[in-house]
Image 1 (cartoon, rainbow, N blue to C red):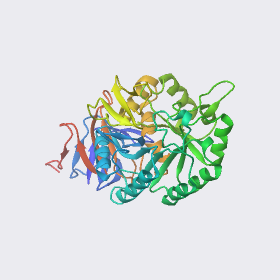
Image 2: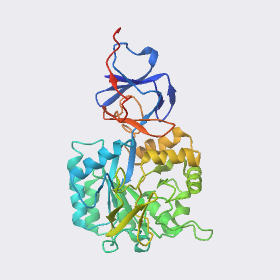
Image 3: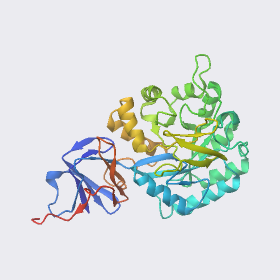
Length: 392
């Protein structure tokens, strides 16, 4: 057991100073006033920085030079996880974009096996496609976009949320009974890459859709006479993921979405291989995508994921949008945990929760270290676990 001291704790429900977070093994043991700490307890001096729950990314295609679609393997998941830690993300959904059934089955089998030993780093699979609207495909390979096959939908539903946490589809392209089948299995069904009318979107929500994928992007827009998918989700309690990098969505639109969606707006990265690397190009959906000036774009100008981290998204929401820091942190941890129903053990700093913790400088938004299931990963020389004081 050790105590994280000398910090501002953003627990997800309170903002505390002069308090310590006690970690015992892989779990949070307690939050106590520093004055009440046992003097014999080892300390981790957080140097006055901010301490928050580890971030949870529901949409991560790749990072650290790897792309999940390109290498559906445990090594890929390891690279993604360790790259994530450097920017404060301790849990994520590896995202498999539109591909063939064989790769989808392989990804499901991999995640099922991997989660037996890594249940709190990979929280399940995000299948983004292939049941999309070709007119809103974005960077997705049109050769693999197809109608929902009953046998494959049944296999996904049978795998359940411990394997497939999230599935993105275009509700106007999928029969309501198939959407309901997935939702009843406990899988979070999200609308994305969709050209649904307002009426089709509302019908999708009624069938079991409970989220939208990258709000504003690759979906029918909100217009006065045609509210589309954006208008529908603004008029519904569904969750909405948003890419707050300033390229996918104008910060004014992030501000509007936050005012409307409140605790249902979730930060996602939509990250790709350049995150954490110096890569200048990569392949996604069969197209080469170039990383230039903070954007990932194909030769024709189509956005192909992002190079965003959730720490950067939090910073953008606070600095550019004016969202209070405590609330921006909830958008990256608590709200995604709620959306996929893991908020009973992740997304908060609370007794009994998994000890996934992000330590960052609130002035620079540089991550100084993380606690990953109790294990310290220090990225600053100033962050060191010290033994109990000599006079204890």
